[in-house]
Length: 116
Length: 400
View 1 (cartoon, each protein chain N blue to C red):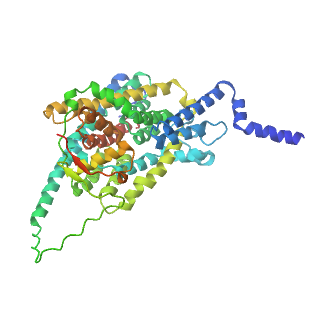
View 2: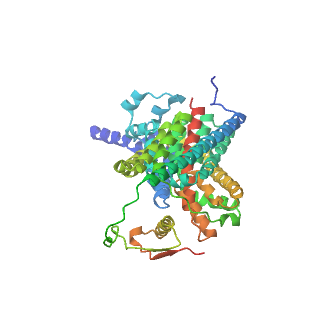
View 3: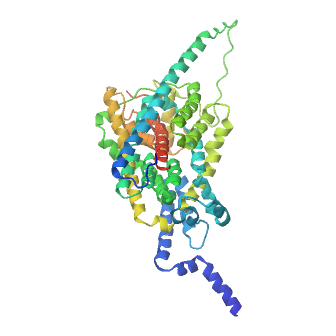
């Protein structure tokens, strides 16, 4: 059935708008559900894999002290985080760099502490 | 002596000044106004930094196409006498430099390639960590439909109204992708409105955010998001492509490229392609897209009452899109017992990452220890999918 959508009345426009909003919600709600199911399945599978992985053998001799981690080029070294997760710290540093209009590798962060 | 005089006379007639003199009167004034408008847009892009990567190209394309006698873009080849059919042979035979570049717009190649780059730059992790945030991205598409209704009320045809409405998706490539099919004659003003308002998001959104939320809501501190595994991130683009394109096949080129770019980023075995999509490809396509979209803003098309109406409806679209996201944010605040900060709702308008940054800045004004950025990225990237779905729906309805 062909419909003339070129010269559309306001009332038909309202119908199209209502249908359009419904379609957008329906698709995104469907994706939301799929993401939730996907998360449950992936977590279950990854949990199973971790459980079935063999325990690492105990070291026969005390391990040699680990070499210090390589520091990225331009980095000024470590940072002390107090009650702040890594992701939040990274975000804070990115925001500060953006606000100061200065590349991140030209800034030095000594510590980040959550103000409670 | 007559010979030399004739040469000078011919040269004089072939200059832009000669062409302007031949045009005379109103047409000449219109050309001059368009040159002035393109210079204003260049100023906004370069000095005020309004989406400069695209606006500078758009403004310069507009300048080139409006220089009398340049002959590098021929609108009559693309939409002659209202016909929807393009004579491709004539385009290749008679087209100028910008006509050839415009092929990428007309065939929907540039917006899709830009989306591949956007996908390669986007982390869907925050959205996957909090899937409920997708509701905010869906609600923010309200602006698309409100502006579409407004445009119908103003007397625009259905396809034109749909193209104007998609400005509310706050997504330039999506707006161009839909408009090139439904209303190519409005591409110039719609693209300029879309990109200008995207640049103005830090000015448009905060008053609406304050109007639709209480101080208590704005101070809400949200819980840390869970980490998302690599497997989930790899599966996501594949699943979204299959599901969305089965429901709305018309959106396959746009959303498919977005998800392909994201898969390059996340799968871990195509770093080179991801890097190319994010940088080299994105930059090249941005150059082509900007200049060819700007070229469509000819005096005859641009200097009309319609352009002013499009600009007004574009602002309406952005305002209602912001309000839609915020209102669902308010609802989620009540339903979760105050665990959701509704300020993240305004980020559902797409415009990645500008809208999310506005949520972050506004949230910190009310609670300096509040970091909403990652929480706002969820609705922000959902908005990209939402606006693509809205565009696909409008294309399915009005493009048939």
